[in-house]
Amino acid sequence: MYKIKDFYIKSIYDTKGKKIGIVEDLYLDFFQEKIMGVKVASHKLFSKKNYIPMDMIVEIGKEIITLGIEQYDGLEFKKIRNMEVINTLGETEGVLEDIIIDARDYSIKGIIVSSGIIDRLINGKQVLLIKECILGEKYILHCGKSKIKLKTMPHRLERQYEI
Image (cartoon, rainbow, N blue to C red; front, side, top):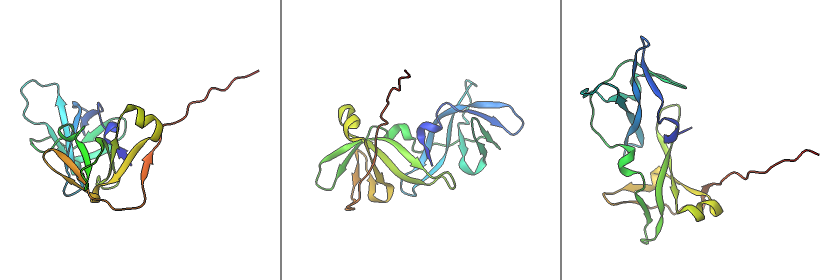
């Protein structure tokens, strides 16, 4: 599983070893629940080519290796990041912080919702299934009625002393 944070600022190379740029953002299709491709921040000033489809990516490791680059305009993650998530009762559950991506087929499995700094330290972040969410213009509607709540908890750091 990947998170969006795992992709940011990775270098992108073509199959000949030439550097194309770095990852600026990811394009996604919220309704089909999948990542469409990678938005490239190119070092060329007037280049209109800014998109690598996921099926043209050969390898994702420390760097991304691709077969080519093309032009595209779609929904970027940055446009919906920090969007408010509400439930069917109109109560705020938090804001969209990250997305969980399946490494095999780049489908979106869930969204990570944070409800504030102090609440995040105490209770962690909430994980919502993408199938239970509807993307609107102003907010994301969570329609889930599941009794199971998924959370990511902060790690407890402890110091060990040697005597």
